[in-house]
Length: 158
Image (cartoon, one colour):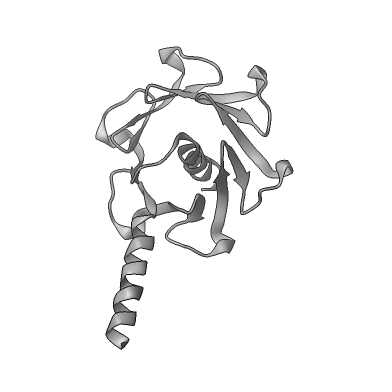
């Protein structure tokens, strides 16, 4: 019976860790270089899973501050690749837009306004594809909303 319980617990632990997406500095895969992690639609500091270390969370198309789901704590609202401040959908409140693997300033789609390029789980500065320009790497699949939550954590928390 003990072996069965241990096997079930081990399986549960593996399933939980498989659902976790880790974000590393640059090209690193080293555990000490984890900037943040995503689990259950929450972004945690470093490798933590403690609720006090949640920087923001994703619910539908919104990014909320910390563990909140209160409308007053909406950091960003995402629609059709456009990232709006708070709950706004006004074009003047677009802080960036994501299109074809590129993050542009505000409403622009001009190549000179590329903030970052996303390719194969790596986020490069500007339009670069040089490995020295990798700001961070994401190990796992994320939605656009989860990506924005990770971006917020890296740019504004760290």
